[in-house]
Figure 1: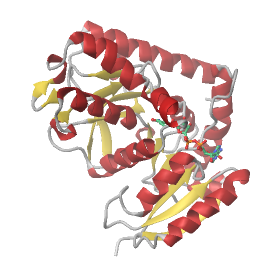
Figure 2: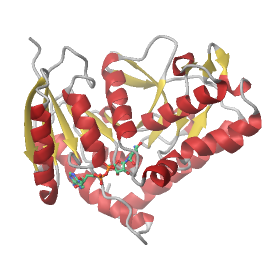
Figure 3: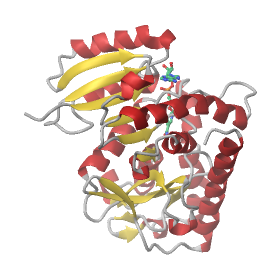
Figure 4: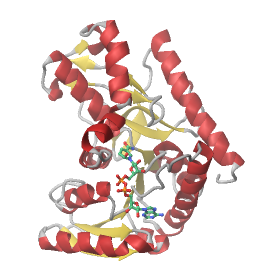
Length: 327
Ligand code: NAX
């Protein structure tokens, strides 16, 4: 039988954690043949709540779940881990400036990066979900110099899935007809969901919808969907975020289907004019367990301006965390 894969989830007692852990333990993260061991990392005040979630995980009697460890010590949580889902983060409080937010999250993602560097397994893969996800991922990555940079990613798969759902609803087609959606840039309101390379049943998506809908409805709806969920639900996206995290890792490990790609924030190699080293969302394929940026797409002026605006925001965030001495 296959040895269990160690999966660490931070912020395990939070609402995404609650939606995510059961999917991981049931085998949806890595597939039905791969046993998993869970490591839950929480802050001391939330360890008890994480223990409660672990009791419920036990009560599911999942055949693939081979153990659960709960800790408030990052070094223990990442020791020997294969997959790290960094969900726990410091939310933006009232009156908090962006610099304060980045500072507070630096206090979380710097030590977690160091702990990953010190103890994680050689095949470690990291997905950062906690916001500001791209820059949190950058902070962790910069403190893990012994880990190949391409093992650090941030999540834009939820934005990607939201874009698919919007196009499918608009054109009244199944979601499976929609391929090659791209989210570019930052997981923030500046993100650019691109329909100019996307295909609907083999035809370019941007040509199947009117330009006004694309500009005035589609782009803002995808970019502001998180706020719309909060408005409706009274709480931020949780199950959909957990689902996207499962998709991100599943695709990373198992590959993208022929004729399609997905979106993930990965360390830029300078492709598409995105400064090297920024963790920015791109169209990516996965082959042999590695995400690779899709090359050679033509970017028109409309897309160029939007990609540049989101990437400029990422560069500013990087400059701020540099000034704060966090990287
Ligand atoms: P919750 O506030 O419900 O849970 C966060 C949990 O993290 C809490 O239990 C808290 O105790 C824990 N935590 C805080 N600091 C920690 C640390 N240093 N180590 C371990 N655990 C720590 O938030 P939830 O709704 O679960 O959202 C989690 C994060 O995901 C937030 O930052 C949120 O903004 C972000 N999101 C990212 C999305 C994306 O697409 N990338 C979408 C959904 C979500 O908004």
